[in-house]
Amino acid sequence: MKNESLEKSMPLVVADVGSTLNTLATQCRASPAGESMTDPFDSIYRLFFQLTMRTLGISSWASPSSPMLSKSLDWFETIDKSTSLIRIIFPWLPTINHFRRMTASAKLYFAVKDEFADGLIRDGEKKTRCNTSWITARTR
Image (cartoon, rainbow, N blue to C red):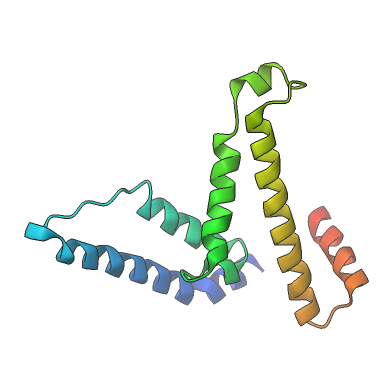
């Protein structure tokens, strides 16, 4: 199953990498004196996230024109940045970062849940079957 999924998404992965590299090359040619710099923590990080979403996540979100690619990346970054040492030492203490993390986690959860349910409905499943399929997938 895993190999089939990877084989199916490989042409799209190659196209995503080619598109990103072409964009970076175009930016280099357009800059004055042929000098161009890119922030690898922005451009390459975004590419890795896109490839991860393409192969392991929701592939419809992985297209460069999809607004969900940027939104989900922002949610993951918010979750990552909101981790604090204070919360580890005092887990009962509500902090601003904890509320940010909870908000971003809830947004991500509901977006993935809705996408999963929409995908099952498109495949002809009923609403009650969607919940059963989701629970079954989580227990495997």
